[in-house]
Length: 609
Ligand SMILES: Nc1nc2c(ncn2[C@@H]2O[C@H](COP(=O)(O)OP(=O)(O)OP(=O)(O)O)[C@@H](O)[C@H]2O)c(=O)[nH]1
Image (tube, rainbow, N blue to C red; front, side, top):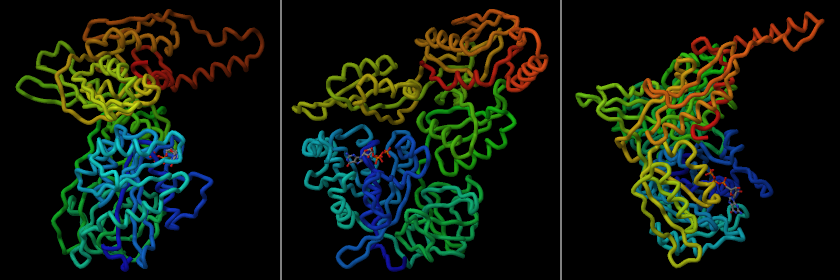
């Protein structure tokens, strides 16, 4: 590693809208530099390591890979950081960019500039990262690179002569990309002979070695046996191993200024690895670098074990998983209906879904997740402000200490072919959108597209907005949003009750305009999943003491042995045993027995369905 001073190092990321080919390009770069073996017949996506990433074909977690490249008698060390494209993972993209001096901006040659192309471009520009524009998928019959390049130049302020045309799938143009990385990405400006200054920009967890941190060395060097100190916590650690991702962990003797690699030290707790923290050598303190903007949870949900006895195991699994996914916030929560659990904050609903799947895949957990809710802001008398992330804690309508309630808003950008513009405007209006404006991307072209911007409540975006957007635009619309602060709103806490007893796990906050509709949907849903009891059950959706909607389940007299005529005493006994067994899995709301699966079923469907 010592033979790679800064002028022979290039740290770069790949940024793009979802599915424009980042992981495929990463594979080709790793192949062309001989880092992985070539097998063009399959699309390996070696950097998508998680099972959920392979199954869904999306990148969730940014990955790092180092490669060597010979060029005009010099060997360069290239550090690639592959980033996720989905809007929920924008935070990962920003974090990765802080360790880079350059970024390949990929645009699909048939789809052109999309909503996240704009957001990642602006993020890279803001960070002063050198952008190398690349048009990918030129092998596609529908590819129109010239039109796309004109579009990039018009919307992104990109010089058309700088755009590289490639096909990550077939390999066309990949060597030009490598050439451009060496020629155009500035080398890091770190100093090897200065005091150690290591920026922790990512972490993962290893069962045997504890926390593994990814470092970008801003100055100095680091090796096994060094004693390092965190600027943030002032805790001291012994470095056990340093190495590079190649793309698997490969130990090296020392990491030097400007390089990117992993460090294993005796760090045991997730809470110790602060993203954006600076580390220095014991006795040689340095000024910490400006930290990262902390990720902000957009949706919250309660996570409970299906079997309440599994809570300690679940909590431990969540703790482990948050080590590899630092953008999740965790708090304990307990519910009368579901027992002990955790309330987690996520960057979006895809993020939530991915986290649940990872809990199931990687930790064998069996969980119930409550409906996602957004964080509300309540202004009380005396100018006191409280944030509520659990609908149960939302104030009742007759609480006179409340001055106003506010909900989080987002500025949404939708890019869509012209013919769907009307549909998109309708969709936005029906989700309480306002300030809707639009302009055209490619004027004069036959395939004109519009950019629609609007203000929308976050709670409308996190349910089924994205699915509807895709449906109503035949899959052509792309969508991105950013935080736009809080706004006063007419919101109420809706409770669902069984014979007058509220089910806390199903509390929700609804807008005035949706009260009737949502009330009807949920009482109906509950009627479908609640088994008939020996007495009549009234299902009510209420706001304060006012009933908004009601369903009734009539009584039955249940005799599990009724259908078994004559004979076989053992058979009857078996049925009674089975009934006893399943009773253990029952949850009680008042005097009503609810099977755990009822919660599972009802919470797997979305609020608006
Ligand atoms: N025809 C063609 N298909 C490509 C090309 N590059 C990528 N693809 C395909 O496009 C799809 C998406 O590619 P990925 O590499 O997974 O895209 P990504 O940008 O990493 O996606 P996310 O990580 O989910 O954001 C895959 O089916 C690829 O096989 C290309 O040059 N030509």
